[in-house]
Each structure stands twice: as structure tokens, then as C-alpha cells.
Amino acid sequence: MTGPAPLLAGVELGGTKCIAAVARGKDIVQRAQWPTGDDAPATLGAIADWLRAAYAIEPFAALGIASFGPLWLDPASPHYGQLVNTPKPGWSGVDLIGGLAKGLPCPVVLDTDVAGAALAEGLWGASIGVQSHVYLTIGTGIGAGVVIDGKPYHGALHPEVGHIRVRRAAGSTFAGICPRHGDCLEGLASGPAIAARAGLSADRLPPDHPVWSEVAGDIGELIATLILTLAPQRIVIGGGVGQGQPGLLPLVRRATARALAGYMPGYDEAALEGLVVPPGLGASAGVYGAIALAKSFAPTAQS
Image (cartoon, rainbow, N blue to C red; front, top):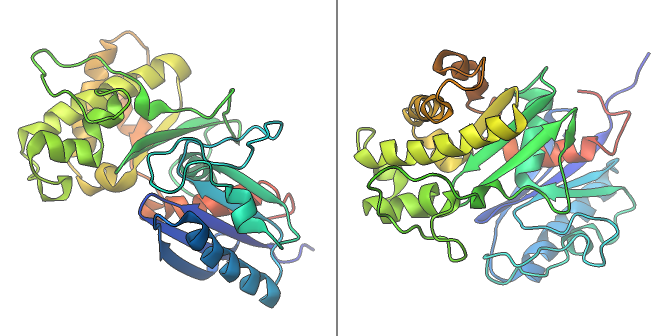
């Protein structure tokens, strides 16, 4: 006879807001939210105080931190646990693990917000039952987490899919807004890029605006690249832009099939309806991602 699943804590650090939660399995029992201000120590300090108070009420078995990046994730690196040169003002070089976990006598695991979301979708969402899957977020920025056999993929660093350059549509003249690469995917299809292309924020663009076809074409090129390199069994598209425009996914699937040009068997437009899907966890994929990271350090945890 097994006992209850252990209590787990998670922190989702996003570009605009931070969420902390304590959960038992998938059931969140406490949750709090803060704006992601430019004063990183103050933000992390407030979250750390909340975590210590929650731990004092009932200890949790592990803490997962799912953060925007780039991140140093190699435990052998002297910079492990820190943010790299992030465009978020005030956060470059910040020690996330030290800032959040000080005084907590439990295992701590850090990964990207998209890797966490991918893990969560595999546990509780749209990627249940598949061995290789991707979570692609399209919002203020663009990023992707890749999970293979239940573990996030890392090389020398984590994947930075949002900064891949894609083949542009004939006649496209938009220069892109990425300060490093110009017309990488994030520079073309993120929320701020769409606003720059259309002169209107993505949430105010009508579904029949021509910019959606252009954006879908760029995203389709990226997804074709992911299919050609990884052949994943599922690609989940989340984020404010990804989920905020219901008509975008069909356009993206069509553009992906066009980019693949019939080369990959089993990836025609009809098959892509079951492969390129919205998140099963909706807008909560990020905070559940942090809990999923904690779960990976708590082997007795139950779903």
C-alpha cells in the first residue's frame, strides 16, 4: 500500500511574471505570483521568503526552477545556476539557485521554462505516451524544450531554437527585430516582432490579417527543421501568441507540410494535425513545468 505523493515546489521565472507553487502530484495546494521586475535580487528574495514559509508549514521533497534563459546548466561549470547574457534588464549573471534555494534543505533542479513545460506536457498534457517531443513557446520570445525518453535534451548548452534562421518567403523584406541576429525566428515571429511587422499587437490583429500567413510560414520553416533534425512524435505550441490565435495552428501545419515538400514519410498535412498541437495544460504549462522538474528529483512522487 503506497502513501500519498510527496509535496513538491516549483518556481516559474518568466519575462513578465514569476509564479511559485507547491503541489502534490498535479494538484496545486499553494500558489503566489510576482512581477518580474528589473531588480532581480529583490524579486528572488520575495519568492525565497515565500518558499521558506511554505516549507516551514510542510516540507517539500524537491524544488524545481523553470526559468527564462539563457542558463548555465552544466553542474561542472563555475557559473552553474546562473543566467547568461539575457536581454532581460537586471538579470544577466544572476545566481538563480543561490537566490531562491538558500536555506532550503531539499534537492533543487534548474532548467529552462520550455524544458520544464515539455516535461509537464509529457507527464500530464498533450505529449503523454510519446518518447520524443518538443514544447515550442511563441510569445514575447521564442524557445523550445526537447524531451527524449523522459529527459530534457542538453548539449554544451540547452537548445536555443528561437534563434535559428529560417528560409524567408519570396519578397519578404521585414528586417526582423532580434538585436543579435535580426531575422532569426524570434526576430520574425515573436509577439514584439509581429507588432513591428503589422503595426498592431498580436492580440489585436484580426484572424484574416495577412501578417498571420507570413508568420505561419516562418514558424512552419522552423517546425520543418525540427522534424528533419529530430523527427519528434509530438510538437506542442504554447505561449501567448501560440495559443492566442486559434487560426494560427492550421496555417502553421500547412506551411510545415509545404516546407517538407513530401520528403518525410508520415509528416503530410493530415498527419501534422496529430503531431503539431496546442498544449494540454494551456497557460499553466510553465508552472506545471517547474513542478515536473521537482518531480524528476523525487523518485517516489506519483502522478
